[in-house]
Length: 170
Length: 207
Image (cartoon, rainbow over all chains, first blue to last red):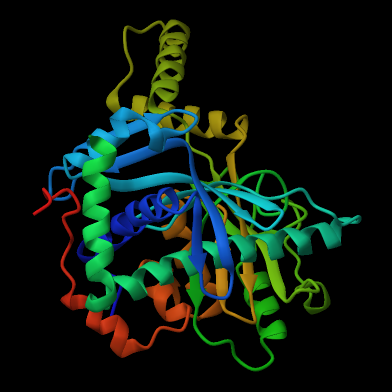
C-alpha cells in the first residue's frame, strides 16, 4: 500500500493527540515496549487543526502550551494536534523534536550534549543520537497504531480519551 | 546547524536495496553527478550536484573515504542559482539605453537594438554576480537504507529525490505515516488493514 497523505493524515493527528492524553494521564510518562517509560512533555508551540477540506487551526505559543485554555478549548471543538514540539526524556538524556503529524517532518531537533572528543567520534555520536530519538518517536507511533487497530484494546482508550477531552476543557 | 552540529530539521527517506560493491559504484555515481560551477558567460541559471560533506568546493569522491565508521555516507547536495532579478535587469537596461541614446544622439533605440542591449546587460550583470548557494546535508545509512535530508522544503526535497534517483539509480521513498510502519516491521497485511480505519471523534459528548 502506498502512503496516501490525505487518506491517512488523521492517523498522525490522532497519534499526537493520543500522546498528549497518554502523557497527561500518566504523570508525564508513556510506556513504550522495549524502551520502558518515556517522559513526554509538549513544549513551546502547539498547533491543533480541524479535519476536512477547510482546516481551521489554533496555534498556541507558551512554555506549557498543552496546559493553556486555548489548546484545551480547541480539543473540545474537535481539533486535533497537527504539529507539536515534543520534549522527550529517556533515562538521563533529553531530546527536543518539532514533529509534523502528517509528514513526520522533524524540525529543530535538539540532542543531548556530546561526550565524544574528536570530530569523527562526535559525528558518529550525533548520528547515534538521531537514531535514538527517531527510535523513540517511531516506537511511540507504533505503540499508538497497534492500539488503534485493535478494537478490543482501543475501545476503552477511546472512551477514556473522550472523557479526558471533556474534562480538560471543562 | 545541521546533521553534525546544532539543531537540525530534516525529512526522512528510505532507499531501495543496495547493490553488491556499492562503494565503488556510488563513488562513480557521485563523481558523475558532482557539482560544477555555473559559467556566468552562459545562460545557465541553476546548477546542482554533489559535493563533499566537509567542503562545499570539493566534488571528488573516493571509496575509502565514502563511509564513516558507523556505516553512514555523508555528502551534500549543492544547488547554485545565478538569476538576475527582473527589476535589476530592467533598471540597468534602461540606464544603458539612456546612455546609448545620448551617445548616438537619438531619442530611442529600435526594438532589435533594445533586445540586444538587454542581452548584453544581462551578460554583464551575470559576470559580476555571485550565484546564490544552497547546501543540503545528506546522511545515508547504508545498512538500513534510511536517508536523512537536512531540509524541510518541498522544492528542495523534489530536487534531492530527482538527483538521488538519477545518480544512484535506486528508488527513494519518503518515510510517511504508513512507510514508517513497514520500516519498523509491521506486516504488509496489517498495514493494508489500516484502510478500514476511519477518523475518530474525540470530542463527542459522553454518553
